[in-house]
Image 1: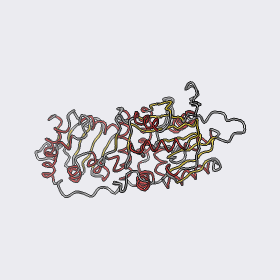
Image 2: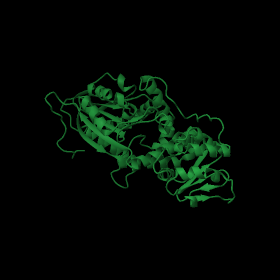
Image 3: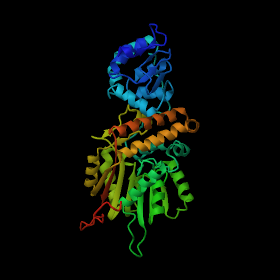
Image 4: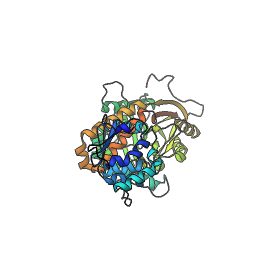
Amino acid sequence: MATLLESTSGAAGTVVDELAPLLERVFVDPLVVELRFWDGSSYGRNQVGVVRFNGPDALRRIVWSPDELGLARAYVAGDIDIEGPMVEVLRALQVGVGGDTSAVMRAAAELVRASRALGGLGSRLRPPAEEVVPHGIRHSLRRDRAAVGHHYDVGNSFYELVLGPSMTYSCARFTTAATSLEAAQSAKHELICRKLGLDRPRAEGADRRRLLDVGCGWGSMAIHAATNHDVDVVAVTISTEQAASARARVAEHGLADRIEIRLQDYREVTDGPYDAISSIGMAEHVGHRRMQLYFEKLFGLLTPGGRLLNHAIASVGGSRLGRRSFVNRYVFPDGELLDIADTVRSMEASGFEVRDVENLREHYDRTLRCWVDNLQRNWDTAVELVGEPRSRVWLMYMAGSVNGFEDAGLQLYQTLGVRLHADGRSEIPPTRDSW
C-alpha cells in the first residue's frame, strides 16, 4: 500500500504523510479513487474519480463522527467535493474498505492523532441544516407527518426535475433495453393495475370498481388507473405539497370526477369497502412493529375478492435505519426495510392469502441511474431550487442506493394478496398471462 502514497511536492510533512497510518489501515484494497487534500498531496490513483478534502474542517467532522454520518456531513457541508461519476466513486470507496463501513471508527486513534497534527481537532461543528432528528413517539401520526414532510415537501419543481414527466417516485419497469424512464413508469403502473384485476370487465349495471392508492405521491398511479381502467380512485398522502400537486394534475387530466386526492393518513380512511388497494413505496414508512396493523387496516377496507398490491424496498433480515446513518438523518427519517418473509408473514397474519411475489431489483438500479442522470444534468437548476446542500444529499443518497440494488443488498418486491370470499374463492386468474 505504500506505493499508493503520492505527494505533489514530494516533501515530508504533507497532509497525506500525517494520514498515512490511518489510510493504510482503512483501505485494504488498492484505491482507484484519488483522495486529494488541501495542500495538494494525495492518496490513491484517479482511475474513477477524485474525493477532494477542502480543508481541516473535513477531518474535523469525521473525527467527531468517525462513521458514514461524519463523511456525509462533510460532503453536504461542502468540506468534501466528489469529482467524477458519483455511483462509481462511492462503489470504489466501498470496495477499498473491503465493505467495512466501520473501518474508520476502528482506526479512531490514528484519526485523532493525524487530525490534531493537521489542525482538524477543534470543537464539534454544527451539522448542516438539512439534517433532522425526529422527535415524539415513533410512527405516531404527528411524527410520521413530520418525517414525510422533511422528505417530500422540498418543492414539486425539484422532484419534477429529478423524476421527469412521470412524477413517479418508485421503481419503474423497463420492458426493453430502449425503454425510457417515462414509459417504464407507465409499464409499472399498468402491471400493478393488472395484478389488482382492474382490467377485468364489470358486470352489466355494476358500479365502477374503487381503488384506494395509499401514499399516492403526485397522483401518477391514480391518474394511470382512472385513465386506462374503469375505476374510481381515492388517493391519500400526508404530504401537503404532494396533495396540492396531485390535485392540480388530476384537474389537468380532466379526472376530478373520478379521482379524489386526500391529505389523509391511511389510518384515518374509514369509507371502505374498496375493490383494490395499491401501496407503492409506502410500507418503508410504516415500520416493522406496525406492519401487521398496517395490513390489518387495509384488509378491513377491502371487499371479499379484493386485492392488495404492496410494492416496497426490502433487505435480507430486515433493517431499521440507524440513528447515525446518513439516510435516516438526511433522507428517510424513521425508515425501515422488512425482509420479504416478514412482509408475507404479516400479510398472512392479517388475513390475506398471498398469491404472487416478484422481485424487480435490477429495475430499481436502472431507475435510480435515470434519476441520478437527471439531477447531474440539471445540477445548476436543482441548486437554484433547493440549494446546494440538499442537492448534494439527493445525489449521494440516490447514487449510494444504485450500489445497494446492484450488489443485492437491497431488493424491490411486489407482493400480491387477496381477501378471500367466505367460501374460499379468490377471483385470481389461473395463470399470470393477463399480467
